[in-house]
Amino acid sequence: MSDIVNWGVLGYARIARLNVLPAISRAANARLVAVASRDPAKAAECARDFKCERTYTRYEDLLADKDIQAVYIPLPNSMHKEWAIRAMEAGKHVLCEKPIAMNASEAREMAEVSRRTGKLLMEAFMYRYTDRSRRVREVIESGVLGEIRHINATFRFLLDRPNTIKAQPELGGGALYDVGCYPVNFLSLVTGRTPVSCHALAEYENGVDVNLSAVLQYEDGLIANIHCGFNAYGKTFAEVIGTKGMMEVADTFLDFRGGIQVYAKDGTRTIPVAESDRYRDEVADFSAAILEGREPLLTLDETIRNMEVLDMIRAQLKVPA
Image 1: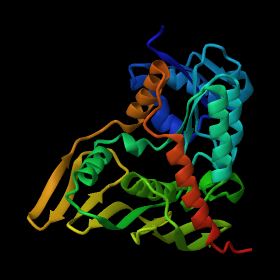
Image 2 (image 1 turned 120 degrees about the vertical axis):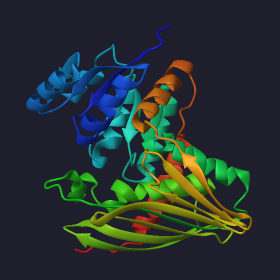
Image 3 (image 1 turned 180 degrees about the vertical axis):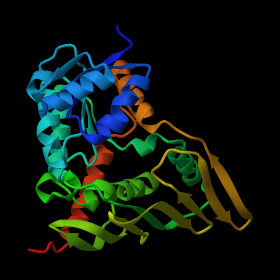
């Protein structure tokens, strides 16, 4: 049995070009075989810059390639469900960009296809493969914070690229889908649970949310705040406050080195965080899961739970006509 997984990529998107395609080349158990782009010029660019063995101008042709075992999908959010399902039904395992779908119902349908076909499906939250995320879990599991009573998580940046799909509502644009899903996932990382109530507000531009905050409450009373946006200065940050202590996580979703601050009655300490290669490790884990016949790091149960929270938030919003 081969110890290498052959990869194909559906779409020559910015995140694929800058992050995931290079990551596949850095993963010891992965090999880039083919990329499909409906733009022939982009397909040619990919072949040149990444020494890609094969390029296709139709996604269907890549899925018909019998040498490909896994497919990465960086397409617009509105296209995730269709092409993930088509890929699994074509016999490919699927690593799909976040959010995995437009709503929880779509995610459940995709999960059912994964179960029926026996093909792995994982949402690509690359930050979960950082040393920072591992240290967060260690602090939570140690019990040093006591009973968690409040969580606050933020991911925002200034979006200044024209004609981006992030600003197109028909393609699933908006800050909540693009970066708000990270704080929502962070809540899942910390609690492993689904909130029971939600209040949310958003600012809109051209039909998409560009500035959004939500307050969520859990069955035991725990309250969490999430914030996201792309119309002002960037920030990624999280804090977790318990009955015995507090943790501050700067650069929460990034992979460079730094430190996590933990405050408790016995004093303050800094937990060092090592630099990580989050995209490479994501590809490597998913490839290993295929080769070893196991689940990857992020399960579909968690993904569906996160989509349910996104649905809760979206249900609270008043989209301007």
